[in-house]
Amino acid sequence: MNRRVKEFLEGKEILSLGPRILELSITTACDSSCLGCWCHSPFVDFPQEKKGLFLPFNIIEELICELKEKGLEEVQISGAGEPLLHPQLKEIISLIKRKGIRCHLVTNFLSAGDEEILFFIEEGLDLLTVSLWAGTPETFVLLHPNRKEEDFERISEKLKKLRKERDERGKFYPKVKVYHVLNHLNAEEMEVMLQHALDVGADMIEFKSIDIIPGKTDFLAFTENDVQVLLESIERLKKKVDFPYSVNYDPLNVPHLIVFDDIELRKEIMDYGRFLLKNLLPPGFSVSFDHLDPNNPEPEQLNVRCPKKRINHKSILREEPDQSFYFFFFREYCKGCPMISTCFLGDDEVKEVRLPYLSLLALGRLEREITNYQKKGSYACDIVDKIPCYTGWLYARVEADGEVIPCCKGHAFPVGNIFEKSFWEIWNGEKERLFRREGRKLLKEGPIFQLIGCRKGCDNIGLNISFHGEILTG
Image (cartoon, rainbow, N blue to C red; front, side, top):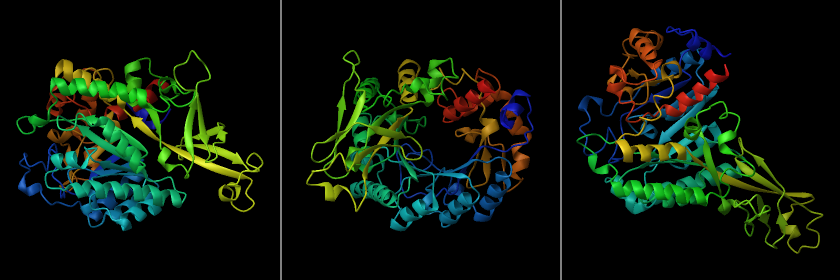
């Protein structure tokens, strides 16, 4: 039994371990104006004293070094501003990676240049999440009024470059996730967004419902027609997946999910399906599918065809870190083909053909959010009361002004400030312990959770469900 699970089950409030995940909002400066942003939307009055802040490197270094010894596994760099604007971002990432900690960067990618792209690859950044909110230049400008259509095209080209440079170097990181917040202005673009992610060679795509700011961004809320459009788009996406759950793969019954008796919990964190990145095959190669069982409507066999239409269906799936299918063409099999000298280098007996795929994440969660929105006007009411909130044992977020908040949306309940107390004092302080006590309750109806708005939407639900699995398995 791991120590975190043990301390939870023993009812401890003062913990020997720090957070598993630390989110750092390293700056409040931003070069965009997303309409739905809680900080930089032109419809929001962001406090003047919070603008243009940068979390000092020495504070970040102290935090990382201290928490590494207390079980820190991942640092997510994101927050109220654009991390790429922090003058010491590279030093921050290098520090995290030197300490052997997983590093996740969330960015709009607007100010990334070739130097940053190569740095991310060589430094081994683990995950790069690019927040786009649009599948076309026109919608991008609509949702980011201070930007131009060329900015969308530039981001797209930089994502393609990152994929190309990464593949040419034989690297698998950073994984790239394209992230879209769905709202009234882009509700009809889900399928276009997916195609864009395939075009740029992303590894993952994720959709999230808009969390509107009452009285400020209500115009972004879904209409009844938007809800219907989105539910129809979700159904079409399910049918478009090249392998709904990959070859002989049931996403609801993989080992890390079968611990949950509740199917709805499984749907929240499952990898719904995979779309093949066919545009990354070598020139002239193509994909085809075979139906081996006439009673099964889904294709069971994936094939790759070479330029001369020779078929190879013997693939190997390597999920991590490759996230690819591999096909092997043997020189003996290809003997007599006029292209053999092109396909096989030197005396190589085997040509390896890699076919990467893009994962569609959290579609079950999105479907639940949309359905709940339609029924009740809130997203998380049917899921957050199913399990305790474990966030107080797993996560903390440090803002650029030093405030520590206990969960992604916990701004209304700060538990301390690192410019006034050490992180460790805050982590085991009275307010954080109160947050843990409340988190043990299934019904999120207490004053803290009403203040945070957990039933409206929880951005830590995936983390909570995953840890619930650890609790169930001991």
